[in-house]
Image 1 (spheres, rainbow, N blue to C red):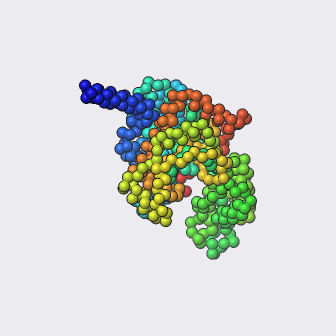
Image 2 (cartoon, rainbow, N blue to C red):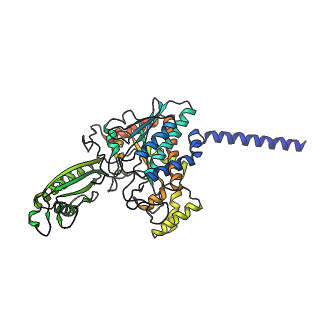
Image 3 (cartoon, rainbow, N blue to C red):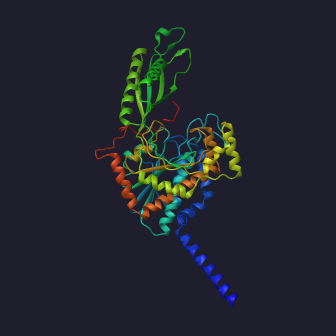
Length: 487
């Protein structure tokens, strides 16, 4: 009798444990159709990100990359509109109906001069060719993966709601998102989710810098530089005089400002006084008011340089972007999802590859542990400089949140060959799938709890101010679709 009692008790314990496990599984936020889809899709998104990595197309020239995006989204039931806001490679892909409407940003342009094989030493695939030094090959693919995962959840749960993928070209200098904002393509969107490849896993809280991008074009008079130099007026002298004055004024601008330039065309031969020269400038500040003054100051220097060298100067606006507007409720929500998903875990092969990268950077390989770590949510502080992005304009029109995952090997620099090498490997694929899971889990919470939208909107309106009116820094200028073409 005692044996029977014990046996029955043990069976009851097993049954109870099984029931509790099922309850726990049902309550597990990672136990849903979206995460299941992503867990089963490594091969799909590994292939797709490497396909776009191989294309490595520059801004406004991303025909194959954009087409691959659009085809994948159509294959997964999205309605796709392409060639929007005057940009042939832009698109908006939509799934679902009604509110809430969640937008996810997707980029896919590469950088010039960064061609690189997926090896831990410098090895260009094409000398002088382009490469994904900012990881936009995984950026756009993660955004699509996250959106398709959200679609799976909406369909399985028969939920109302809309998810939109914004295919935004030419982030690297062309400002594609600004034209899409100006065109009104973000109207009706409740929340925008964004991410960016990084060397770690963290929610982004830095507002960065607003930016204006100009080409200054000098024209002079050609002449034989040895035989009749007095007959010539050097356009290159105008460029160099401008650059000299800008380097002097650096002492007198706010320390958080940034000014960079490159001489895009300085002439053809030393023995010909150049009658044409062009210099490209990026002018940045965390505050748009200061940026406006800096831009005017540089133009005054350009006019003075032309007068002093008896040349003429004109300017061409390439693009202009706002600084980022943060949203604390959304940042807290995404932090929770990042911690739930976790960091990037290297296998033995990936660890060996990353180890060679950091060895080449003269760093200790313990830094690699940062790829698996989720950084705590930092407080928002006024920006002291840094990079710029056309996400800024989106963030001043729709509540927006951004984060990073460890696509790149910790310790490597932005826009580097090391980044190109890393993001074309399975490290990039693991990191993009983590980003996609964060997108999916964040969206599920927003669809399930519309109060989150109210909180984000309240913060958004408070930070913008009651009198805010969006005026794009680039005015009514059209997209410079040829800005990456050599002239």
